[in-house]
Length: 166
Ligand SMILES: [Zn+2]
Image (cartoon, rainbow, N blue to C red; front, side, top):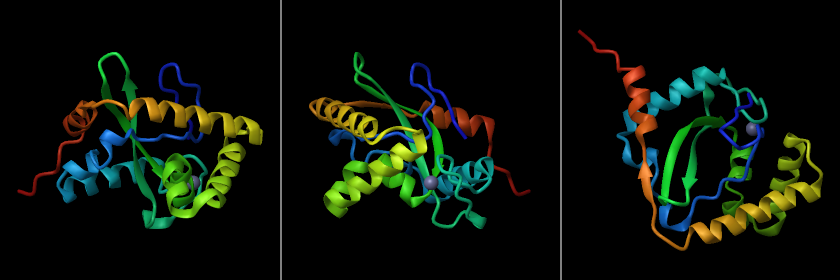
């Protein structure tokens, strides 16, 4: 499934590096586990228990990752949650290719970039360009503190209220 967010072209897979000051600050970390599981289950059902970038299907959704998508407003220094997307492990590694570098070194980064190129229909040079641009952006974004906007989740809860047992 491909989505467009404003000015960003519809890519199947993107490198999304979280600025250093925001490490560990995410929806999953702040929600009670049961609330997170409810959101993840909803996202899995919406995606048909399938990795949204590559289409890998895992019945029951085991090992699939509920990835949080964010935008960054440079002027207000606000990181805004814009939704969630189901990823398989390999696609998630591409998204967090910075972590791939830490965990597996250049070999794993190379593997991630090949996948990025393949899924987006890019040449290796285009994938490398995208990765380098994301890294430069990450370095800049890591220089200062960020506010966080989680109202996407509040709207989601309002639209999907928990079922009451009565
Ligand atoms: Zn995938």
